[in-house]
Length: 320
Image 1 (cartoon, rainbow, N blue to C red):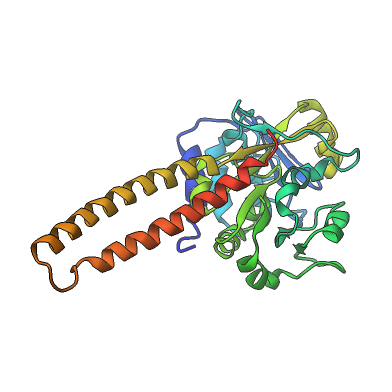
Image 2 (image 1 turned 135 degrees about the horizontal axis):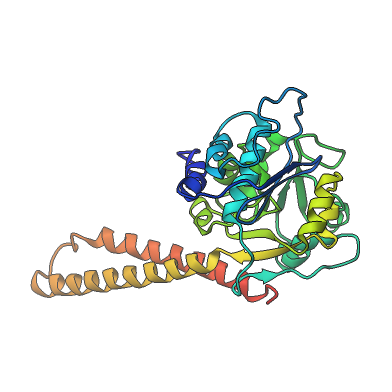
């Protein structure tokens, strides 16, 4: 990614002119909760201090006044900024979004993987971050897990440079935006179908510009339950009635763009073919001087067709 700040500038542009006020902020052990126009979440940074100068002063501030922290390198400030930004960006799902039903009892936090399971079977898949309960799926499928603090069956962070370029599916936590790993991880995942997932995900269609194919964020089912769970240090328990995953397919827009590009390229090719036929009819000797342009258009059409077919096939078997 040539300009890693672009994704952060995008989010800041969205909230820059917004007058949203932070009504409540809770920094839990696992999740940080912010309430302004809606509810925003971000996974809490692992670094803690007893001397935060801003403690006790954030309620009543505008979201835009703290949003800039998301570009900084203080992990806790970035967490707060991300949750505040999400409290402006994230709204309830629309009719075009798909709510993922709870699967087996006790593994609601893994519903995303159950949803995409038909497509990751037999495919090289990489998950950034160790999700509790993922061990069984890891044993049954070619699922590699990259973790900052790797366990026995995990790969360390540097493995991203080797595994992601070869991956067919990449599951990337929304927290990667807050911790600044998102730009590089997306650059490495350009050949994969990328699912940006988790409560920290900002609900922005423009993330497709960075290579994200699916957003999987959360819908708040019970505000009071969520607040209590966050306050009491809940991790995956927030999926037991407080929030639920829902999917936004960014690829539908990309499919339309590819269709339009195919149509435009076909017209270019037809015009060039007509020109070539006229040239040979009139000149009748030598090689058509623009023949290499025609070859390039054929190659571009072949690539566009492959991209379209791949994206189309994936979406045919996904649950409605």
